[in-house]
Image (cartoon, rainbow, N blue to C red):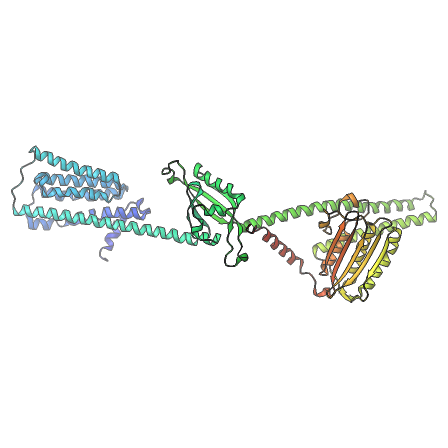
Length: 607
């Protein structure tokens, strides 16, 4: 084998570059070139030995040896042009001509050389071309027919007398034909084995690719029926491949998405164009995932037609190959972004409404301050002391109101940015509650509202921010008084359980509509103007209360009915130091995770 290696390497260099791109084509070119080139060269190299034993050759023998140049020239032709079928046709013509000439000189159709005509179509069979085999068979039959006609018409030269030398030549011709046919058979077997291994290697590569791809490859026939599914489908859909065959895949597509699924396949098959579609498909909950219940995942399918099937199908319909990919995560991100976008738009709209309200709330006290201060500073006006005191009181009240609005804005801004700090300390909550009620008793009396307290005796000591609790109570009681008509009542209650301090502020005022109740307490949100714009206020009171309660690790509950009253309940931990909320950044991260989970569209299987 080491001796023949340089020979095979040289034969490889003779293969045309165009044929080297395909392993099977290159093997066919080598099978054509090697036996003709090497056989002719070996035969020519043996010519001197033949002369030594044979003596002076006859004209026929010289012609046979001269013909050995033809296979070399045909091999060179194939090496230079790469025209495989043309080289086979030339080889058939050359071999047919040689056999016909030898048979014509040695007895016609009964010559020992006539058997070589059988070899002509056998040699052409290696081309794997019906056209070449048909031409070679035509050449061989034409040569045989010509020899028969010439023999019947007695136009052939008389056969040479039978001698030992002639018999030896005939035997050599038969043996050489048999050996040549054996070489052709071995060449055919070698090509078949090469084709088998190349096909096996190609299929193995595709099997390896299909098994290790996360995307699913499907092949669809008429009406979208599945003819093939790659093994990755078991991981993606949680079912065996056999269950997806025929219309099994279609049955798992969400009912609302089935028209889009079928339309994409139909367009690819009928129009011969690539199509892409996204749809939901039911996935089995396996291995205990999601409790074992089925749910839907988003799939992107890219399908394209198989053009080679269009000619075979009676109605011109094409088979379709599709690649399916799980895009649930991308859909989840898109949904999360959409939710975030809508939330941002909502917040921006709320901020715009808030700014419009703030412009009124800030302008009113500023106008009072500027107007009354101008009147006090006007020397042309004669004002008695009582009038001056009244103007000074109005300026003071307007300034305090303005300061309250600004402080509310600053507190809300700090809470939104996570910069508002509380200082927990132990204190008795009953004293703080009673103090706030005493502070607002005069305001309630002026408004004609009865302010009552219902504080449970023996309230435990709490660890909280006294200033924050004071602000919570003042905001809640002030709002209750503000939105309670004259003759109404406001009740402040306090109780406790083993873990929390419960404070409630209840009134029988204007109440809050059901549409606004879920959003009450959000930053920059005010209940609609139909029932509250006749009252002064920035709308920040409940937002600040909600923020302060959250900073203590507590919760707030609001229950109200329009024109019947409102009840606000605040629950604070007895020891807020150990119940403080986590870092705001962590909360935002968790919220984003919740949005992503919601956006996964895991729909439980319906009954």
